Length: 184
Image (cartoon, rainbow, N blue to C red; front, side, top):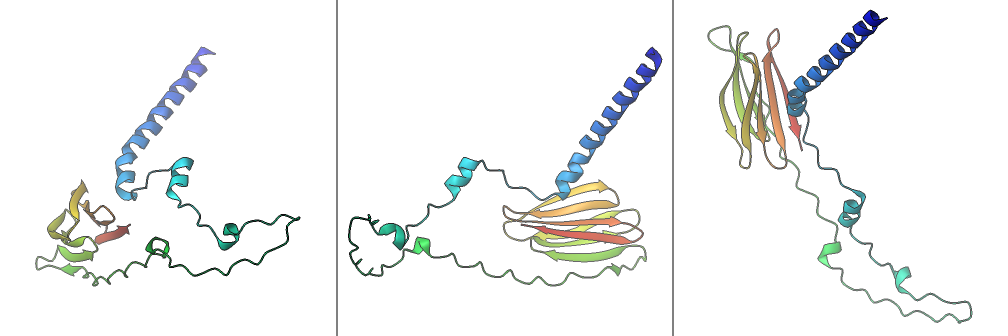
């Protein structure tokens, strides 16, 4: 009876270690590919964030009791509404970005080049089956550049600002491959 129980406990321990190791190993990948989530708010924080309801004309007139005779209500005079209650103007439309280039073969016949233009800036990559390189990058005002290399043949370049992140993941996968992500 002790031997089978020992095997079960050893299997259980190995499983827990494997799952924990996988979870810890995936955290950097999940953090790099997931958009930043806003902080969660409690119910009291949500109540504070909502503006108080404005009084309506019905709420402003006195209530009548059954014993009193109704008196004509004075006609309401229009009052100018303050700017704070005006609905906010919609934001200006986002400018259309120029199309990014296509992959083109360089003179050596093995390396491909492509320029990506995203909201955060512009970046040019050289890719071949052995290596992915950033040739040049230019961040737009308010953006910072971060490069995360996963291997010689895979990297992510991010243009990050307070409001938005533009990510370009480039790798060699039976040819040049790229994924572009824009998060707000």
